[in-house]
Length: 249
Ligand code: ADP
Ligand code: MG
Image (cartoon, rainbow, N blue to C red; front, side):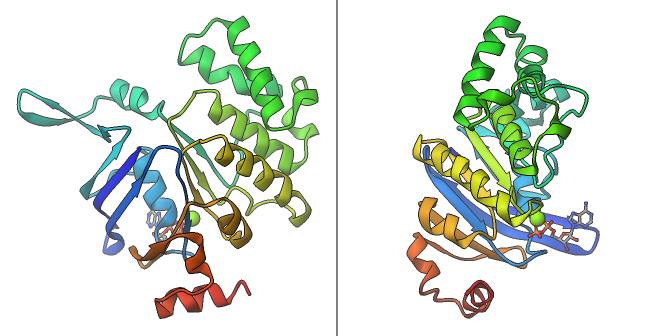
């Protein structure tokens, strides 16, 4: 579902990604760990067209991100083609960015109706199903400000799922939440993982990585230091990985 090869990105003189390789199979859950500033967000943003890599390649569901081949040559995608490619990818951020003047239901049907041109009745029906899936059946008519942070983040997850993405990216989805609200969001994400959604999750929640990840990947200074099954969390081989994990003990 995701294949990244040698992805590089610099901001001015700062080399943020120094050749990232990553493979994620359909249905796999990969947790991406690493110290602040190691390039995790930048990597997710490259996958989702929010940044343009300086080098390397990223394929999502077999499609080369940002480019298309035509007549034996490779062209940058036009804005409309970028929009189409982005539909395959759902992203959930630390800050939920819900539309404040729209109800929960309106937030969830916005893109399916506005972008995919789905009939409203059908979009509403699906939205109710998604809200049930994230445990918010009773909040369809509420406004974001009437919800807790954890509930808002679950709406954001439902909103991303409404586009039926092939790949879901989560960038520290619980980092902005009060501690008592973290569990409900992680529980929702665990359910999605169990349902076979393909997910790349940046998080510092080691317990989530242990329970839900098929694989964990450690990044540091723009490189992948180590990757493997969640058991590497108990005995990391790289000293920098060990030093990073010691903070969570
Ligand atoms: P992480 O998510 O692992 O904390 P980021 O990908 O957010 O790391 O950032 C990696 C480095 O890139 C940081 O030093 C950050 O300040 C820098 N950076 C990120 N985005 C930009 C940008 N748009 N312009 C300049 N520097 C940036
Ligand atoms: Mg980040």
